[in-house]
Image (cartoon, rainbow, N blue to C red):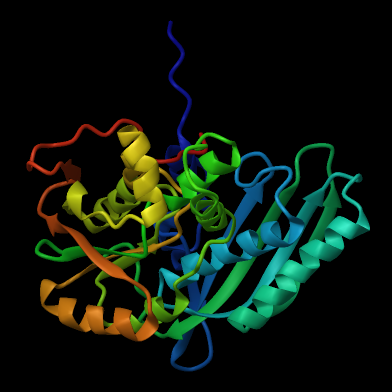
Length: 327
């Protein structure tokens, strides 16, 4: 008898952990939990881990590792429209990581605490013989009943993204020496986008009451839009020609057109992805200008299921490996 295939990441969550969850965990179908806060408010809870060799490179500067760790969690809070409050930190470090590494790591946290107006609430520290493993549990707050969740997208909504897509994955390629044709400035830009995500907290907060569904892009546009569609019970169409690309990404794609797929399926962008009524587009563009964060309409929500991607001629574009999976 042939053994059944191993469960993927989301099947594992559904089978082993969803039965353990409180109602506040939203069935583990979103990327946060909500609990009651002070009168008129709720706390938004989020945890994410990063692992050396998976989410960052062994020779990445310790301060930037710390900042990436914090920012990937803040990005999830941004995707709910939340205001950050604080965070818990767990470090699992090999004994050879000395005090100089820890000092620079702490300096990175301190810099971002100042930038984002948050502080450390506690945590844990353990030793390991494996790779560096770091985890943050972030806490944010929202007005009660105002959190923008994955569910809520409606047929007729437009699909929007912030910033530019594909930079994170191309930044990793740059750091691995795979894009030598780029200029030094282009390589530096992409590397920075991989190492230092920019959580769109201000814009996420301004989208409360306008966006019907929202999350950040961590596993890739198609995969994460698929999460919104699945929970909302809808389908979506994305127009590949509308995807916003940075000048550095365009230069990389000019040398290898196959790299365009990074904007569709690669992770590590940490931009916001949201569904909102088309009539709100003018308001959204005003907010974008106010905050200096580009917002681009890339598609639409439809009745049905799944995500279709259309090429420049309107033909369906085959998508292989729709996003990053841990298992």
